[in-house]
Amino acid sequence: MKKQEKRKKSAKVAETKPKPKPAADKPKAKANTAAKVIKAEKPAKVDKKASKTEVTESKKRGVFRKLLSPFVRFGRYVAASFRELRLMRFPNRKAAWKMTFAVVIYALIFFIFIALLDTFWGMVFQRLIG
Image 1 (cartoon, rainbow, N blue to C red):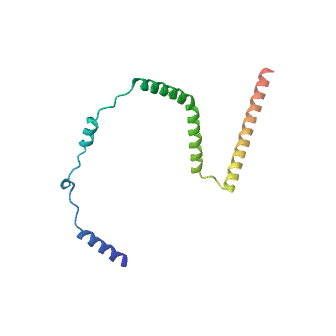
Image 2 (cartoon, rainbow, N blue to C red):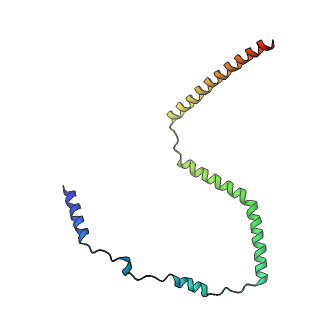
Image 3 (cartoon, rainbow, N blue to C red):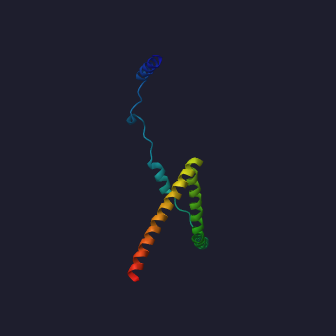
């Protein structure tokens, strides 16, 4: 009963609060001014000798990155694998034993089936050959 009264009071308070003004009344910020400032700036002059050394350095870095990329990718794979393992939910001991016995029984049944097929086809070919 008290909770319903509180909800009614909070609903009345919400109705009496002044509504915010529409977005049209607010002054708009000028977004184009930053773009104009960036366009107005001139790029700095670059030394030709410095740019050549930068190019050779970037080529060296590119070769170095290509040589290391398989190792980097393998490292990412290992890290992602460990992250995935942390998310896994492992079975308790009882469930693990149940699943182990299920696999062993399935393997035995499959082994018997294959052994019977092998024996059958062996006998068939023995009679055909000789």
